[in-house]
Image 1: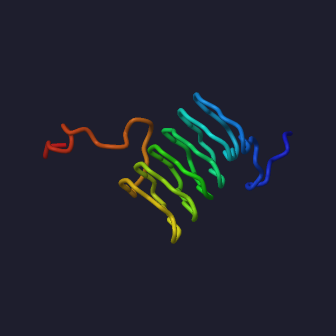
Image 2 (image 1 turned 120 degrees about the horizontal axis):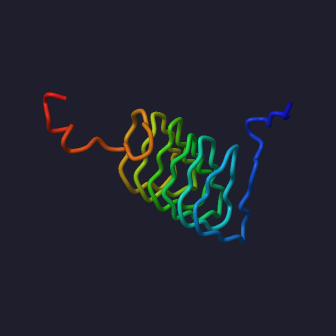
Image 3 (image 1 turned 180 degrees about the vertical axis):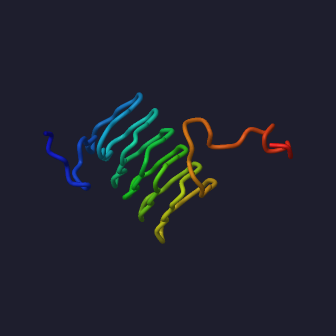
Length: 132
């Protein structure tokens, strides 16, 4: 039997001074304190630390921005937390959202259930057709 990790245990860390570009898919809890550019997907938790610079489309269960800058849209099926001095430039979509005083946020916010990939917005056909 595999030991279970505490909910706060970090399973991977992209530390300060590191740079990564590409697609990140993970299980567990990942923290980014460096520079990341690309795409991030998971059914678990992503932590953006102070000093981080993330340019990515993010689609995970939970995102916790503890500081740093995120450029890109964030879709979280469980929750999004943005703590000062964090900065987010992009759209947020999650059923639960916390934004701390002192956070800089530029974008749109949508608070409802996040469905599977690609369903962030209803199609124009369904939205305009009263029979559906």
